[in-house]
Figure (tube, rainbow, N blue to C red):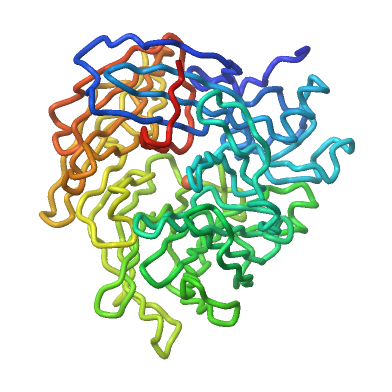
Length: 495
Ligand SMILES: [Fe+2]
């Protein structure tokens, strides 16, 4: 590599890591790893391999454009082994051959080197999911890539044997714990900024069971989805895309504060003409938490922010972002009647269940699409933010791990002390017969001023007690995106 990364990409613990390798038997520095824990923790990590060759580097490119790397912890019999390896996407292999960056800004093919015109731009860097015996790493701008859960070798782009003709596939499909079906979709399915949505249902073996195509009311991000026992829900975020803006060198996405929230609802195996687009007052639709049905109505729970939840990496149409720390979010429940006469949703359909100020909620996977009680989320308590010796704010995203008991209306937090920030945790049930929510939360905890990270394991229903195990990592873990737990029954032995 003959060129240095720009200063904006070399900030402390989050500068590109570019490392591939393994550490056998991580050092337990406190407590002990519960012997019943058996599985694989995988995390998708954007980690730019080459410095961008761009005059006009967008913040979204810095934050979310990096090459996908799979970070994995194999936990078994009280020991934890670690591996990390890049996803060999088409883009990664092309750039590696050229020994330089060939792809430009986030979801902007107009900023690419002409030599890669028409090539896949995805970095597969957002989330992993396991279905039909396959471990898949995805970013919503292209096809997912299949990863070997042992070696972390890349097997190739996943199209379900050619069944996925959409150009994209979500990083957040949903798996029904009862039927094993996977519900997924691609938006911008016929190309960047198109309004097309391709909807796919796969059976437990991974074979295509159902397909339907829809057109969203606006060209905008549909990052997540939710499924009930009978319906699929597509929440359209107020983050819009526009081909002409992109062609003119503008960012792929801008925040539109006036845009209504749209919820596309369709029966699980519904046809194209069966979708209904419900329209709600403006609000920033974040990740979904769960959805279910009660009394014939859909109860759709999601984290909703009171402003631009993607600031500052996505700005508004005037290029502006709210001051840091001013946007908060809450767990919100929308009640939707698929058979209602009107498509309009009002405040009467919206209930704030609890303030959260966090992102990336996890529930017990056995309760997906059904009634649930416990929610686990990394959260931020702004009162606990600190500055470094030079008076600069310590870069902390989430300084607590939080448990919300939605039945008792109770909340518990674990605050690990100042200058520490959590990455996305996973929830692991204690065992097949355990009560809902009873098990462990496992998370990476970054200490940015020390440029080091640790792995912490906590009892999920007793977070304030602190970790039952703390493991020291011999290298820094730059900020990844989503984490997923794969049960030991589906995770191969590593050594
Ligand atoms: Fe996400």
